[in-house]
Amino acid sequence: MPENALVKAGPAPVDQFATLSDVTCEVAVVLGTGRMSVRECLYLKPKTIIPLEQTAGSDLHVRINGVLIAHGEVAIVDDSTNIRLTSILPPPSGEDLT
Figure 1: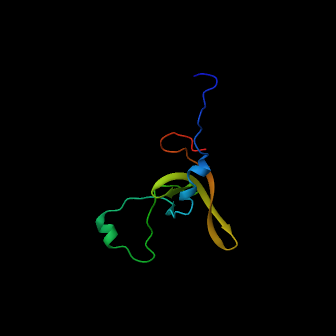
Figure 2: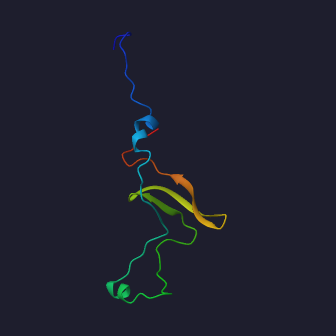
Figure 3: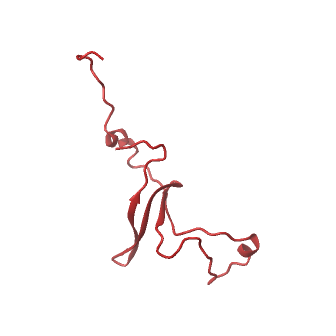
């Protein structure tokens, strides 16, 4: 490439997504998963205990629009249940968005 050639850089990631900044996304925090037969599902009632595959103290899974993006733990702040992120996963494509 010649020295005097202009290299056009793309917009900064924040600018690139500025028009999407007010779009609402569904955030789900998954405590764990388990398996049940249809028969067991049909007989569910209040106070039923459903066993999960995760062990006590396992990280929670944070999903945005169904995509796993982070892990976290329960945090109580001012009598409100929250999640404290413990790790952020890389983007699925392996590309760095920053």
